Length: 101
Length: 101
Length: 101
Length: 101
Image: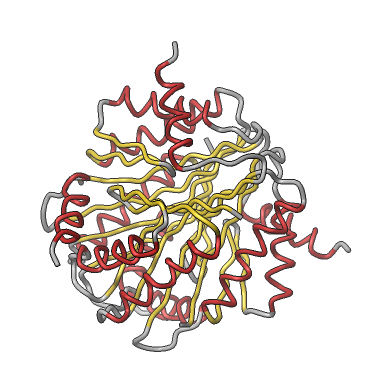
């Protein structure tokens, strides 16, 4: 099952700045070799279900290991069986329609 | 890692009513033996990370197998290492505070 | 437009326990007179769009006023034009199907 | 209150492709004049609370007016009072940390 997610990991109990922990997550995501794209409120990742979800788990593990006692994550997960569709396809599909009258 | 999630599975391409698919998910959740509680916009589930996430995957599998070509799921995931806290603890904690002046 | 939401307000920079802030939100929700139901990972609220969204804003205002420098909220919003459906209707619909073989 | 959101509007009952409806939302967002950035699983928008939330409402209105009988939206909302931070600042902060070490 091919999966596209939008991942937003929020550590609690570490103060107001969370960029150090978010960066550690980005490194886990990058190390996974999965296609990904960061945006201002999360990171999109795509690949086989188990691989993508393993990265989500590693993000929780690494953020806890950095000292965060609590994490709340928001995740969107998309799967489809009718056809293959990448993250780029999704954005292109809307961009093309935007250019039509 | 103990995990509490809030799961909301949304099948696309099956018409406006999704209760048949949501019911199938509830049956998967119930069959897992994990503690869970349905509400009007999702279902809370708690247990070991891998067990809980396996149920999420089975929900996608069963909803696709019922004919839904596309699924978008919203998930909240909470973990903490400072202390054990169940779903009931979370609700009780706020309810007790509500009763104080 | 009738709206059903699932609201989860997360204050950052206030330490690991957030129940004091969540309780303040619950009081705002209760004061609104809107129908609502707390669960272990948020609160469902229903009513006219503007009234419900005004409560969400007041939650951010009150949590900041308590000293939280940063808030991240996850919200699910449901509207439908085909028929009226309350929070109770949604849960009942699935519960009834669960009882059928 | 300055607000950064991540908006993902999902029409139900319109078939498996939702890009026509997502495009209509993008046009509403663009027409608002608010700073925004589309990604593969939503769109980030920033600006004053009431302006941003008005766009979310117009998205629901326009998608219903196109014939979608039901909509479920997932929204992340971020506010902070300790300092100003734009969508670009958030991404830059993590990108800079990624390049260190």
